[in-house]
Amino acid sequence: MGKTGGFIEYSRKDHGVRAPQDRIGDYGEFSQRLPEDEQKIQAARCMNCGTPFCQAGLDINGKLTGCPLHNLIPEWNDLVFRGKWQEAYERLVLTNPFPEFTGRLCPAPCEAGCNLGLNDDPTSIKDTELQIIERAFESGWAKPISIVNRTGKKVLVIGSGPSGLAAAHTLNRLGNQVTVFERDDRMGGLLMYGIPNMKLDKRIVSRRLENMKSEGIRLECNMPITSKEQADQILVEYDAVLLCCGSKKARDLSVPGREALGIYFAVDYLSRNTKSLLESDLTDGKEISAKGKHVVIVGGGDTGTDCTATAVRQGAVSITQIEIMDCPPEKRDYNNPWPEWPVVCKQDYGQQEVILKYGMDPRRWLTTITKINKGFSGEIISVEVSRVKWEKVENSIVAVPLKGSEEILSCDLLLIAMGFTGPEAAIMDAFSVEVNNRGYPVSDVLFHTSNPKVFTAGDQRRGQSLVVWAIREGIECAYEVNHSDLRTTYVLL
Image (cartoon, rainbow, N blue to C red; front, top):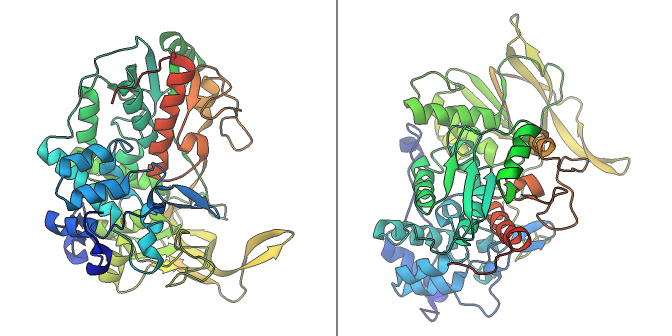
């Protein structure tokens, strides 16, 4: 512990954010780091606990608490407080290859597990993590290393999202020759096209990709795998193949009128906007625009929030966010104690921006769409919604529409952000990978598939999850590949 009693002396102070009225006019990142001297004070609040739940990565009642990467949080908090930033960076990257991603995107289960959070505000771990890695890039410490000893083994990673990049990074550090295939025109997967620029500036992704290329990893875009012939050729050329293609089958909305024009999945909406932003600064007209439209978003999660923020910037007339679940309490309930993940109602950046511009929170809780109405040309013109009540029906808890609560909302653009149901089947079929009834690979051994040369990790294996989980999956899968198929035992750090 760098500062004895620091947790008593200092109060929590979070990173800054650009004011909503300033940030809604552009796609720049809205978060702002604290000055380094203030972040050192925040690191001093760490108690260096005997049992640091912050790094535990535990599943409690189906919710994550503590870091799945088991980051050495008390150690680098102490080093930051003492001004030893380079040493803090070296400790951080022992467990996390991409702190610049988790420091921006992770919901911080580490802070949910912080012992200080039992009776005070937890330590601002996520902010310190981001400060460390950005200081490292600015100081030239986060630079490519030379891989001296090569195994002669060739590994192909298909998919360049967080799990694929983490697997590629780890396999390369283990001495293997690694190639990454990405079917899109840019590397990064979810990080590049699935997350808006105001949360993760794409220059941050490109910066990391350049480091990986400099270490010898081959990154190849526009490489979809669509046939068994392609897969067979790959299996001849490579010693092992990792499938890290995500869980991309979007959950659909099954209501009358679903075929209307003007309905899009959220990932398509966000991806096209980001691509247009990167290629033309939104001048090519290829984005799905909410300008002048009444926008309804189905889904209250992070992706739905990203849609609200994007629609604000595009100039929507109105924005409504439909959520079938009830609003969480303002304060955690007695049956949701520490160190469980705190289930509380929060206003994320998208809701804050809608409130500023339109004067009201866009979220409608306990609400569902029951019908979509079309105009003469087949375009969506409105949606019919109803309040719901959750009831037990034949051993299941279902949302039952409440009679008399029906309402019609104007809608020119409907965005479906209801999560994902599983991985796409085509690549599994191409590699003859056996799957279960939900489309996920079947195997008795972690990360393996029914094809002995094919492995899988991330959302494609475990389902939709957090970026930090995807990174952990990629790292662990890389070690499993190295141990099982490539038969090398040394590790290059």
